[in-house]
Image 1 (cartoon, protein in one colour):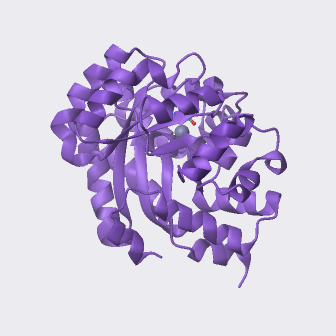
Image 2: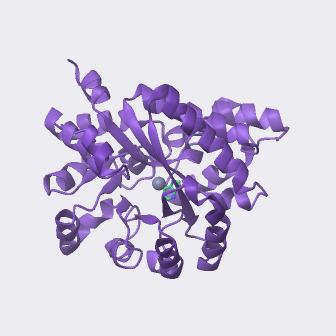
Length: 326
Ligand code: HPA
Ligand code: ZN
């Protein structure tokens, strides 16, 4: 069989996916019309052509602008279900989706609305597409630890809807250690933790995510390569990295896919997984990301099976559910 069908057929989990980053320009315009919101772009093509980023911050500015059209539970439902259809077409069998509660709370959208819409779509996706799921709210690291603590308080009434808490947004200048206290509280409440680290930031941020936040996975983590001892530890602990290759090129973390370090990390025995991050903004869903690294780095079918297997291993599925996919 051809490589596309081969990779599509591998059972795989998507573990690094911001649901707000799946907002396609067509839906942005449809929701803006529905709610009578005026967008600063003439049409879909003009908005799409603004998706031209030089680094993480230039992307975040447009991404936080996009979320303004998400108002009611049906909007969050539509957004999430459209994503699940893409994931299903790519052979994704399990998703763990991030969302940014603070982006919605600050606009006066209650968490009940966000959880209702997202969860209705995820339940329908499990019933109709067979995709299992987890939800992971993330704190915005450019805001204060106190703001994160208030967000945690607001989240706790919805505790049955999420299994872990993450950390995202502008990395440089906002080390994981800034959030040590709130993440201690997150863990004391019984949740797992993850954090973006080593996307643009230094290896020390990955150390802090491990030692201060006690994460179960590192989101991105590609910056680990500059620190030999760190790489050894990540390999030894089989600490998963949720690597997002197309995102890394669009945000200029690597200049081209051929220079991405995914293959080297894989060959060093790290638990590398592949995800799409913000597919509507970067122009690639799960399968596009896997095929992009396969081609640029000349990965074998064995390598592709390893990436897919790693994604199941690194997921927050129960051990029994994981074994069902081996
Ligand atoms: N990095 C940090 N914050 C984000 C990202 C990312 O790739 N996507 C959405 N929020
Ligand atoms: Zn991300």
